[in-house]
Figure (cartoon, one colour):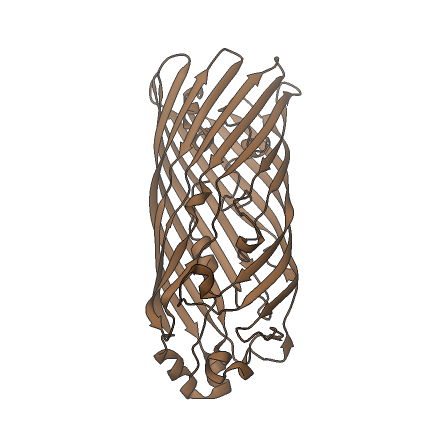
Length: 465
């Protein structure tokens, strides 16, 4: 039997490596509250409601009594690929779709769901004049991508989904009338799924059987990771405030199972094909794991009261995305002639995001809010852009409003349009690209163009006890 080469399971490595804060560059969802979303996340120094627990937990010292904020973001992402092409290890073009079922391989399509709902919850409590307690439960990632089963890119990935939840208890201390600090723990749960296609036709029948008997693996994994957050807020005057917020790296060892579907290989080549593939290391079910250290981030933000009606905001955030430079996905079973490791070398770079915004008090109950932001992508070039996440630089345009129903109840609404630069991905599965002689990879090469944008609608309810 010929050696079966499987494409690296890129998304199980990349998407499972969740950090702390996916509509921003890299992994980040991009917004954890609607009040901040309305200013393109420029208003971290405002501390207007309990969601300050995420953006700068020292801001809890600005909230009297007990405060609750519950937010819901409705995300409408659009990631479309076109002009896609690919080649088998033998150099022949990928033209058949879905394991030789008679369909032609698709070269374009949309890979995102039309709508994703993402909730966030925060609660703060003033223990006394100096100490404030808080708890945030929020979703830093909620993503779902799927190529057609007959896509020319199916050997790179086919379907992916990710859900993560952060639980973030925090305590803030008011040092004096000007300075406050905070410290918290982050417990982060990540769960991911991947469907990865494999060229079993080539494994059994050689170059002449390329694409005639596709198989696929469903890969599932989850993990708890732990980190911390630190914050400082300084009221320079009654008009100007600045703050710093640090969120630590989080280490994940995502462990789960890979289940191989070999039904088409068996239907095409007979029952012996299933036995041969299992003997080559492709068991019906096997363990899989990957170690990931997600990036820390540091934010510097400010707020200035221009007058009784106008507040101005700004935020500069640095993220150490270079932590996602290399990764290894390890299978429980070695594959004949390939070992048991999938290598990944995205070589991401550190990034920055800059946002500016403001608010205008239109009337006693109604405040209008707006903001813009530039978010730098960590992808260095087309040769390092992953088909699983065709990330690129993006611009945020946001506006919204806050309405005070009464002294205890208020509502925030927001709309954001995220403009993402067009991108191209040149994908290679060749082991030599990672400086090794063996790797679990299809050895296919592929290229595609991507057009992406996103819209986010948000609504948030705030209650003061």
